Length: 152
Image 1 (tube, rainbow, N blue to C red):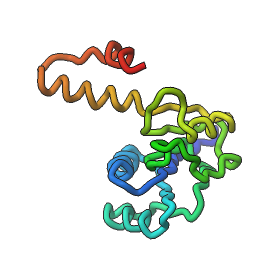
Image 2: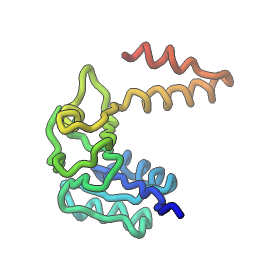
Image 3: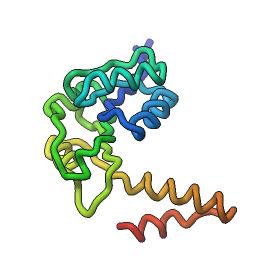
């Protein structure tokens, strides 16, 4: 008989602002075990408490060990600043996702790529948000491919 073990999906969410709040709810709803890191430890704890995210780990260090998804919602990427992620502990094949999009990768994405992680910036999310608005207002499918090409 084969040994069956369910895949445990773990996400490390960096930040504790509005975007982090929305993503925390979405990730938990999608079945992820959530870990939160914010430079202000108490703010991460308050986010988890406010959203009643029992079982969420609040971290004192941005440790991606065991996480298949690392999401940056902090403002650090606006200034192209580094985030103190312990990249050497990241899982092979993990995805580093930065909500920020810019011309070229952010410092967060460059660091993740240097440590062998897959990376993605926020352009797909921007297109998805725009497409939802387009479809709601016009009642027709949005040309997502064209929209994505327009912001590349």
